[in-house]
Image: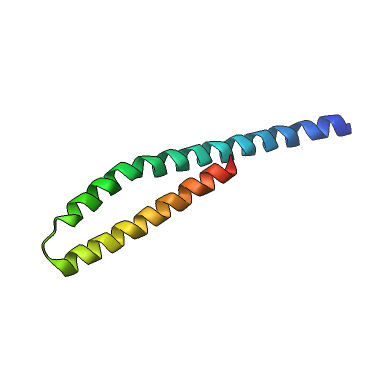
Length: 80
């Protein structure tokens, strides 16, 4: 088998892997972006919770999720 014929399967595999990574990155960015709206809604609702301890716990959890979401978006941006 010539070196040129040997390189073709490798190149096809490399192209498929690149498309796979790009697709996953786009999906991650889309999901992260779509999570922003419900997180904002939850944050607003949490502001009206009367129980201060419960409100604090809710806001902390929302903040953690928001931090993860922003990190995923930053990763997706850097990957592109």
